[in-house]
Length: 112
Ligand SMILES: Nc1ncnc2c1ncn2[C@@H]1O[C@H](COP(=O)(O)OP(=O)(O)OP(=O)(O)O)[C@@H](O)[C@H]1O
Ligand SMILES: [Mg+2]
Image 1 (cartoon, rainbow, N blue to C red):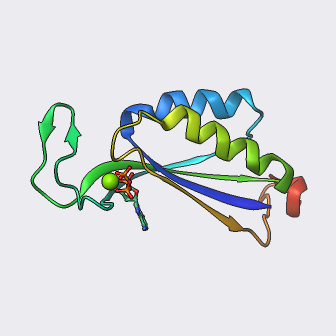
Image 2: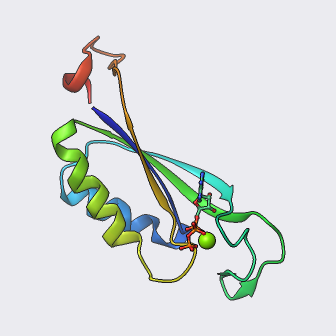
Image 3: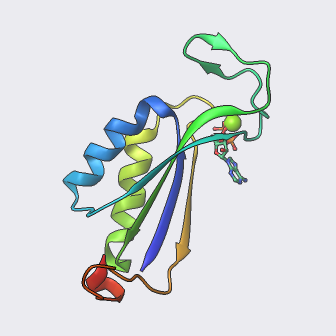
């Protein structure tokens, strides 16, 4: 299994969510985040206003999938979240040891 975390522009959330649903992703977690990248938050526009602070509002999504679905998830997020401008975000991929579905006690890929 893989845990895929992506930091994206907030207005892209719906598009990313719909695209992931279309390829069969079963669940996801969404967090409101603040962050900065190489430009340190400067000279990036958010809703038309130039921020002079270091942290910009971002959305972080977390998706856990079986290994075979991971490349499609990454590609889907990249395509849906991309505007071509700075601040489009990043995708982080981590091997995931186990998942437990609390209600049933299932573990591993069965539990996703
Ligand atoms: N190295 C990092 N570690 C953790 N989070 C990061 C890292 N780089 C970027 N992020 C997160 O991703 C968000 C978007 O980063 P961003 O897309 O601006 O990266 P970048 O490297 O500056 O690329 P670009 O030049 O396209 O803007 C940041 O606000 C931050 O939340
Ligand atoms: Mg940047």
